[in-house]
Length: 288
Image (tube, rainbow, N blue to C red; front, side, top):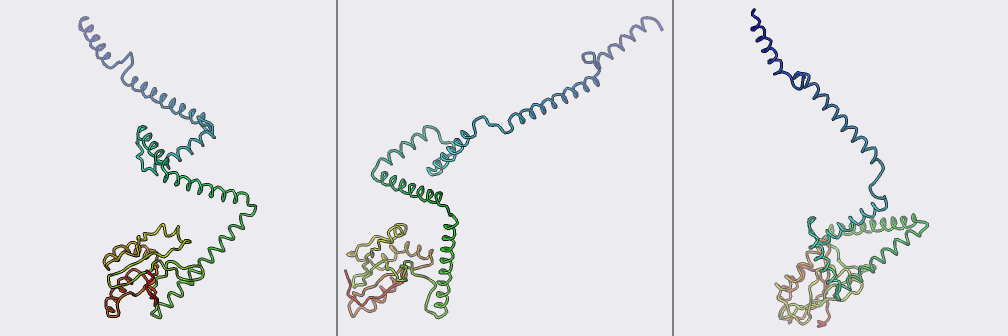
């Protein structure tokens, strides 16, 4: 073979070899090197994370007491936001506006009265908590509460027993009087007068029921106002529905001021009252 042909063949072999070499390495050798470097990086990353976990183990960036305080403040702030129905993304300006509104409301007579009631309630709670902490025999309190629970449960069972007996005898309707004093005496909510013109009513005062009455939808009454049967039903339906929810009925005292010739009218008006109340018929003259 002529020398120039050998030279050309060697040149072609060198060119072919260079096409499979990167930085003096073949493609296979370069791939192995890259995989090795990746393994080194993965191992180094795992080592760094393990070291960070070890350094952070059992430690906080702030003192434990300070962290507890921050968590408490966060809970209190969350409670305020919930009470104000504020959005989680509320801005600083909106927070300042809400604070100003609260301060202005608290500066009114009603606001001051509400704040006084809240402070009194908190003071009462703290007093009870302190008494419980100072008690050397907390089990005595638990025993007392347990006895009271047993007593109430037993009384509830007795009531249901007698209600069942009344229903079996065809006397009771399964609904209890809503207001009964500790001696078993029914406390009547209204005096109701049935007259030729319509129905008049007034509320009977029960000072011991003031707080409970405040939570009931008791309609306002004026003994001089004459109500039609439809108006009487409309005004008393919220109270009636609340009594149904409590499985009881309020009692009223009914006075007859109709004329002797208006017995049909009297029966119609009485039926209207009975739709929402249990009644006691009085033989006395109408008091108003």
